[in-house]
Length: 210
Length: 378
Image (cartoon, rainbow over all chains, first blue to last red; front, top):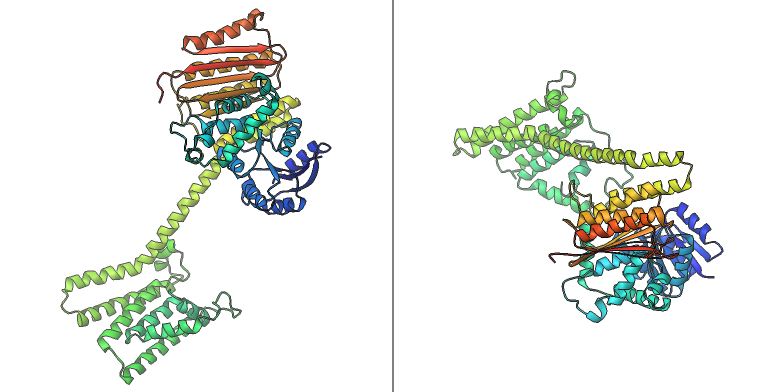
């Protein structure tokens, strides 16, 4: 069973998720603040961490940044009610392999954890929207076209996800295998993490200001 | 003021700080003696704990006799220095000392609320302030006139009078006006904070508390979820998003309100995702109403547990997809009433120069795709 660590400052939500996941994954620990989380994750060394975006004391971003330094194999799935695009993109860029909203059903969450464990990316419709938004037809030419620009196929996959379809449905609709969908999504994730294009930074700051 | 020497001395002896400072200033007149003393005291205290940290309790505030005694000590010291011969001259030291201590008396604001300064001057019950003020003014005026006539005879009498009055007034009222201004600033920011708090409380009362009350009275769990979702969405928008200005009719704002309305009407969760910029103008109306019809259609007929709306606004085109994963239907053999709705969506969009494509498969769900080419790419 996948070993999972939970980090959320809302204890009620923590216990809710715990009971939903019981029996499907092995929960090796949980924390409600940033410092406990960093310490606890290092000690428990789980395969997957479910991580809240907004927490007092630095938020999920601080947790990822600290844990990745010492435990690069731990994988993170951001789980939040937050709709603030710049926070979510910051978590992804720091190393989180996906982002889902807390309204996700238990079955979908369990599936997402499995995907994260396998090293794939988990894109909720909202995250797909954020990414499409970030890469939306920027007029300026990309600095490094190989790395920076999403391919038409990747954009198409993201659009399908944004329209609410699961990976399996996307595969069927585009007549490709689920594995190919996963490859496309992982490529997008990589571009997002490696990209240093200034458009992304500008987009994030624009979001914050307006 | 600089190293806290005067403050420390005042705290140890119980003397009012302003007089200790005045004494140092007067001593400084005697060829910088006060300055030397000050620096010596500073050097001696560098390694000592400050008064706040030390265990030694601060002395109780000294009474009037102690102050007078300390003043006489200072006077004796000055006379001693004068007899030794290190003396800049009678016409300089005495008037300046009078000016300094006159100012000190006026600056001594003990036990006075700044706003009551004027009333305390005429308050018959508490005459200490009045006495201090009178002594201060007399010393100040005497010092200034003697110093003025002796040391600066070349200055015209009129200018001198103006100067004296100006200095006297600013010393008399300056601290009071300063404090009054500070109090006003603090009061204003406190009022702003209170207004913000009141606005927030009002908003929470109108929205969140009402919804919570509704949820408590609702038996139907589905209805509860819809209420909670709608409230969550609204609260989050209020907390994080830009507030749309009154009268603006951008696509994102209108889509959101349409989604909210249909979600509430049909108890159906709707996920709205918007990417790209925003859109205003002629296309917004037909896009929003066609989306609304597609959503209503999905809510009434699909039986799906949720519906997704995805809008993408790029510089040359606008696309909206409304997708459900419900029962679906055979587009070729669709029943007349549903045909009508589909036609109305397609017709409406076509009239405005766009296209609407409806794809559906029995058991797989339905998707409505609205597409508009933008006239003038920006």
